[in-house]
Image 1 (tube, rainbow, N blue to C red):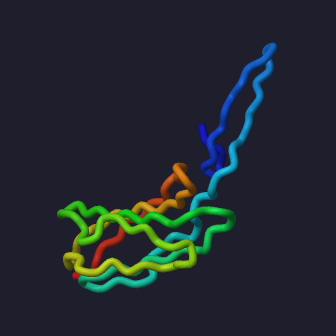
Image 2 (cartoon, rainbow, N blue to C red):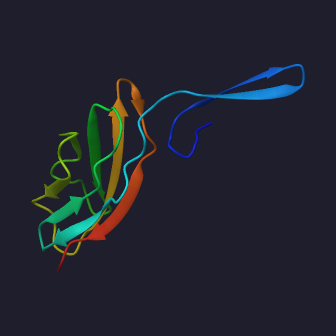
Amino acid sequence: MRDRFGSSKYLRKTSGETFVFFTSGPHPPTGFRLLSRSETEIDLTWDHAPGDFEKYILECKSDEGSCPVAYQALSKSVQAHKFSGLKPGALYSFKFYITKTTRNTNPVELRERTSK
């Protein structure tokens, strides 16, 4: 179970009452959007995430084959990333999330097509 920020919830039932405990965790990224596109590149950007976390993770998949770089671990000071070497007119799916130690936020997803 997760709260609206992607943190885990643990439930404990005692004497007919339910208690909910939230663990502290990173908050999901916001403002994940397309910055620009061309025939072979897609530039993505996002708002800086608040709180303590280690890094951003950005994944890329294509319906027409794999991305040249399918997985990127990015410094928390970074707020944009360019995928290059993509196929013209191809549709790509991007998943973006934040990681802290062994915990990840729920991913934010975006689908964009390169120019033809």
